[in-house]
Length: 423
Image: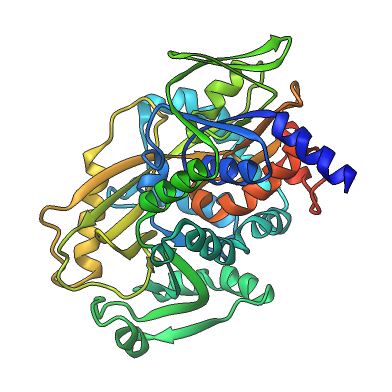
C-alpha cells in the first residue's frame, strides 16, 4: 500500500504538457490525467479542428497493410498520369519531397512488409473496444457505431489485386466475405450497379462525428482535472533546470515531461529540440454532402479510385485521395472536384449541392509506422506522431503506450518498430 501511495504522490507532483489537441494528443492527455499527472494540453486550435476534423471516420481495425509496397510503387506512374487518380504531386514541392520520397520507395521495395503490418496491427486492432468505452465515459455513446464495411470494385482485376491484402487480414482472424453484384445491391441499394465485385469486412466501427468525438473527450479531460490551453507553440526549451519549457505567445509552460503529438507539425517542433525526422504529409481532402438524397448505411471503400464514403451526423462524407505538397501550400480545389466526380459515379443521383470541402494534413513517415518513443536526445520528451491515415484508429492504443513511457514502464509489446532512433 505504501509503495502504491508513493507512486500516486509522485505522479501528482509531475507536470506533463501534451502538445497537440488532435485525437492522439487528446486521448493521451486524458489517459495521463487519469493516472494522476498534472496535465496541460496545448494547441493553437480548438480540440478536433485539425486533421481530426476531416477524417473519414472509419475505425479500421484490419487496415494494417503498409502504405509503401511493390504494388503501390508500380501503380504510382498510372495514378500520376490520371487527373482523376488517387495520387497527385505539387511539382513545385518535389525538390523538398525527394529525400522523403527516396526513403519511401526504399521502404516499399526492401522493408519487411509483414513485420510492418504486425506492428501496425498492434495499434489498430483494439480500437473498437477502446473507443466504445471512451465514448460511453464521455457521455456520447452514439458517436461510435459498430458496423461492417465494404470494399467495392468495378474492375475484376483491381478486386483480385486486393485479394492478398484480404487474405492477410483473414489470417489474423478477421471475417471477410467475397460479395457479388447482387449482394452489393442488396446491402447498399444506393450504390451504382457498376460495382460487380466486393468484400464485406465484419466487426469494425465508425465515428459519426470525428470532430465531435475529439471535443467530447477533451471536455472529459477537463472535467477530470486537465488544463486545456489554446496557444501557438513557438519553441521548446530543453536546457532548463526544471525539465522542459514549452514557449507560447502566452508565456512559458514549464513541465517535467512533454508529449509531442502535433501531427504533421511535429517535425518542425522536434527540430527545435535538435531532432530531425523524415516526416512529411499526405494532404487529404473530403467533401461532405448535407442532403445527399441516396445514401449509405455503412462505410464503403471505393476500391478502384481509393476513397472512403461514410454516413455521418452532418451528411455523407467522401474522403480520400493523396496530394504530396507539404503543409504550407493552399488547398487545391481540383482535388475536391475529383472527389465530387467520383461521388456522382459511385452513388446514382447523389446530391453534391452545398457540399462542404476540406483539406487536412496526414502526418506520414516513409516506412508507414508512427514514432511512439522517447526522443533520442531528451528522455523526458515523448514523441507520438506519424500515424498517416490511421490516426483515429491508432490513437487509443498509442495513448496507452504513451502512458507507459511517461511512467517509465516498459510496455508489454516490442517498441522497436516505433522508435525514433530507427531513422
